[in-house]
Length: 166
Image (cartoon, helix red, strand yellow):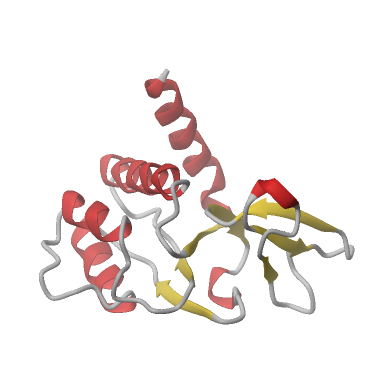
């Protein structure tokens, strides 16, 4: 998707476009440039190869169930000891990230497809809720990276979640 010499390149651009707030410049394969908001998600073919300069990278390897997801998120993102290993606790931590000093946080998901449909849907609904909440600014720029192979499944879940909000 957004690959330059085998690595994704994303540069923060504080207030470059005036009243639109903080945006990112994304450089594509054909040297095209475009702007996106700082809080978002992307899909790439090789998530483990994704890099964002000056960022805290949380790498989540393939997970097989909800408990595996909690354990990998907790270890990779250095969750506080009080993390309750449930959806509410995950949402609470995703809404804050006070323990990470780095401005940019990238959460890379290698493969979530082994999660049950209900767990996959719940996780994605938390991601969407948090992305929407971050519009009010939580002091970090957060990017979720997902495997391109899961794009359809994730987009279907996002569509369903957005339809439910209407």
